[in-house]
Length: 468
Image (cartoon, rainbow, N blue to C red; front, side):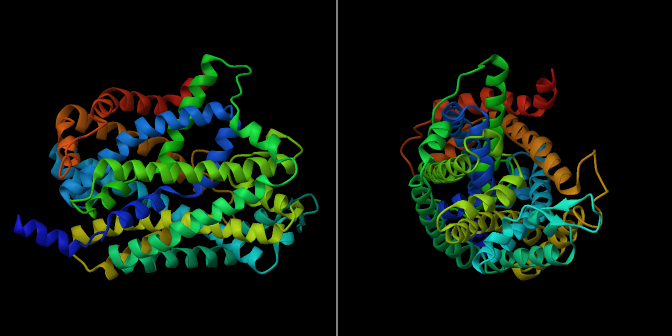
């Protein structure tokens, strides 16, 4: 026992409950909250999607997040060591839990570099340039907007990508308490204040009420079993993005959590913070785009076009748009940075544990791997734009295999391991460590043993079911 405590002390850990909650919430709050959540809410029935998402967040999302954090705290190891300690037959899940963030981190940092570019552009007074609709190219028949013109080159996107990777790496190099916790305690309150301020300002704009109505009120027109299935699948899929589930992050952060901090309430606090940010992001983007597009729901596009094309155009037409645009992209940069730090920490923790190297050298190894893999995504929009994998661009391919295949498989097998092999008591005992009761224990058992596995199967089969 003394050896284990010595080992835990050597690994480092969060110095307070607040530090853990803000760090975990920072991991959960990312690009998925800012642009993906508002788009899905608008697409799948407004308030109806919000209701479905909230129900799954407090049940499905809570159960999976609690499981991962409990595994991390009980084992006190990186994802590779943690899954092996839970059950040797599932040791391979630890490697899968490391590979997922190792593949996500590079392309996530590429997108983070794009956000950084826009933040710099708006801060230096170039908001109008960012809203430029077309750039003429050497080919008379081809025009590019500001975004596509930027990513079609090699030099500048590569430079911003490298800067973004190094920003996160510095924090990881400083360690858990001195780096991740301190930065999270500063960035997360700033992020929350920014999103509240921008949301309040957006709601004061003429015509914002129609956008809020579209965002919040349930739309049951053309309601069908097929639409219900798609809404549920979208809500469950969004939970992976929003709550950092099945990425190894919560296992890793859980391993740094203090034993005397309450586990159940901490997870609830993370959920509240994460969902609040996603909801407020919707109050910014949906009404603003609604006003800009004169009520055209098609303007709420999925993917980079909403963030990097539509929003700059919105800010150009908005009073004080240059300032609001700058604040918005500062907000998005902070959200993306806290998530990329957590992704990097998962891989770094494994390298430290398995190769027994100091954190500095482990971070350098992860940086090199991230830069090499990330350049594939950078080049995929420029000099390798003709290269496709499964008919997808390189970045989209990495996003597809991690989010649509690997993460649901990891979540499904984790549920099987906890629900049927080591039994839910494994997690329940950890929750009860230092607490007198586990308030959601009955719901937790049902979710892990039945609901969550079924949801994971549905997520994996969604492309096929949707086609049918």
